[in-house]
Image 1 (cartoon, rainbow, N blue to C red):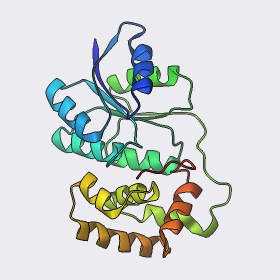
Image 2: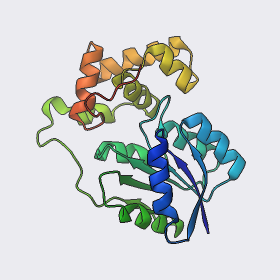
Image 3: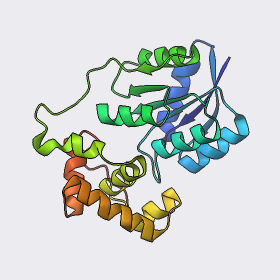
Image 4: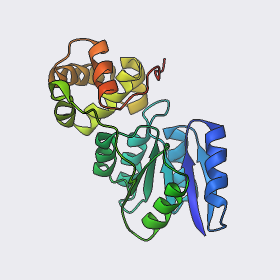
Length: 214
């Protein structure tokens, strides 16, 4: 029996995926979580065989959870399950040690295939076509690739509407550190305003229109 930790900030979504994962009787969702901190505590308590996590959640998000899990246990198996079908986001997840990446727009069986592959020790990437713009105006993808992992996490939070204070709290950083990172991010991306950051996130498929947080 595969013991799974399921992480998503929407309880109804978690319930649906729990039914899917447990349908054939080979897996059991031993714990659920709606935030990174809840997931971190649940992982330490239950020691699941596999964690399946969304990326866009309140607070620091799935990439921060992935980083924490892999630092604590380099052998931790984590599948990122996201509504964002950006190739760059998948690359970031794998750079952080993800074992698999599946988009929520894929057929349900893709998630089951990912679980089976990862539990066999294989890496799984959703074969669905990636949403990349036909024309990368201004080299936005190349500029985003220049961000460090921490800068990318802060960029995502800011693009979703999070304040600097919220970023500091979510990532356990000081407000001054976040402010410094924010200045570097704007310089690397060649923008001067928050609106410019949001535009790049939308252009690169990292943000759904209207998906911002307070």
